[in-house]
View 1: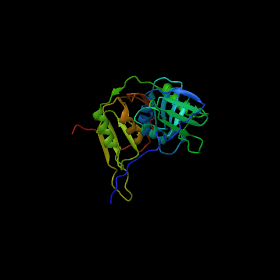
View 2: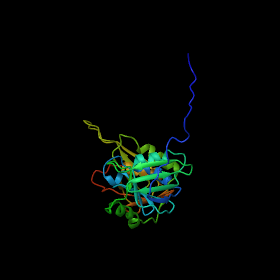
View 3: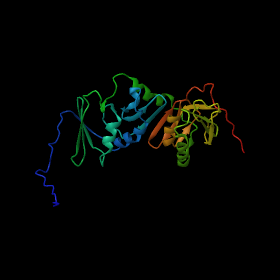
Length: 266
């Protein structure tokens, strides 16, 4: 016979509040928004700098060898920190953003206005959150946005253009690089093993201010197109703006294997 089960809790609060004696920081309301925005731009593996979102001088950064983005957040007293993908997903899973952060050594206690708490220990080998590098690597790369920023002739990129180029350039069989010339984007298919046929070349319209053919990492270019609202190709690295900050797209050496293409009026 089926019986109705009732959950009769013998307690109201299953856990005691977590207490730390460290430094307490009020959090900017847009910190988690910034971390979530930058999450898709992280590398899954490789250079250790590239798998973290960096908080440097009260600004969030993703720093890779091909793409650098920053995200403006409200000013705060937070120290320089690093967040990995798992930590960002965990913080983003809450309905609201945390209001305070308590830091004691390698322990981080996130607190919400409704009394919720999240304790993160970074004492293990795989640290989800930790302090910024003692070496100046990430800070130097982040400062490159200021050093190379020369946004003078940017052209707006419509949402329709962003969607069209992302869809077209996200095919898995495309070559790892993509090319930009005046008024167009050029891509090519990977060479098939044992095939004697010429590599297929695709050309799509793309209004820009490029004055020469330029070569980029395709994944980095697609990542930029995903968010860029204005792009200036008359600079190196390429400067672009997004709704919450700015970025640099690093140009690759053009090389001798540039695909042949012609743009005609039909």
